[in-house]
Image 1 (cartoon, rainbow, N blue to C red):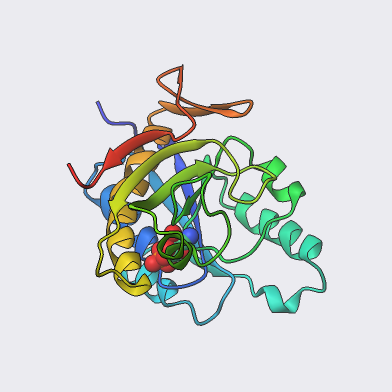
Image 2 (image 1 turned 90 degrees about the vertical axis):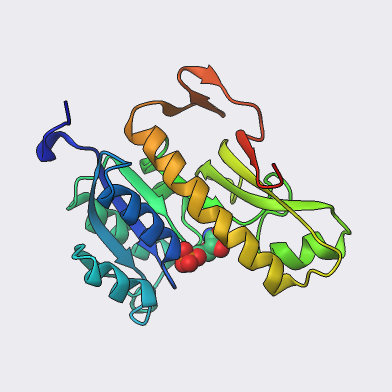
Amino acid sequence: MQASEAEKPRIVILISGTGSNMVAIADAVKAEEIDAEIVGVISNRPTAEGLNKAQAMDLHTDLIDHTLYASRDEFDHALIRMIEDLKPDLVVLAGFMRILTADFTRYYEGRLLNIHPSLLPKYQGLNTHQRALDAGDDIHGVTVHFVTEELDGGPNAIQAIVPILDIDNAPQLQQRVHTQEHVIYPIAVKWFCEGRLTMKGSEALLDGKSLPTSGVQLDSRD
Ligand code: GRF
């Protein structure tokens, strides 16, 4: 039997840009692959394309412009208040381009997910595709992880491995990674909403069992 609307896990998604991961998750909810409710999509940028996409999908949207706040602390506290109004069970960072304070990450510890375009712990930070190419790596990829105080450092839930081809440049590689993002983020959100994916200390657990450092690995070469 399906949970009633009132009992469904409540998801808030934070975006700054295109919002294609937000759409992938919203599509999975709409298709009832994820039994949850997206109660809000929040952007820190007024021009984020994802805001229009969320509205077109009849999702509630909010805007909180970080440039109007004097400090990172003030912004994060206002953001927490905005999120709390939506009473979420899970907060999903989907291309949210703000570094969050420890107050924020501690507040949502264990119920805050992020997607990062590399095989974490490799290539934390920016320009991951170019860095993987410059290093001469054979493989690259993307990771969904729980967020902790350490930037791109919380326990991994799931990764998709993407091969690096001889002819690749950064935009081509980025595009293939992006396709895999849309596969693994809905999976991680589904697991969380089913109570299967949890965080305990510095580990991510699936069905109560510790995951390896990589998280579950999908290999797009298979
Ligand atoms: C993705 O590449 C994701 O890995 C990174 O930000 C980008 C967001 O893309 N964290 P989109 O806005 O979901 O299209």
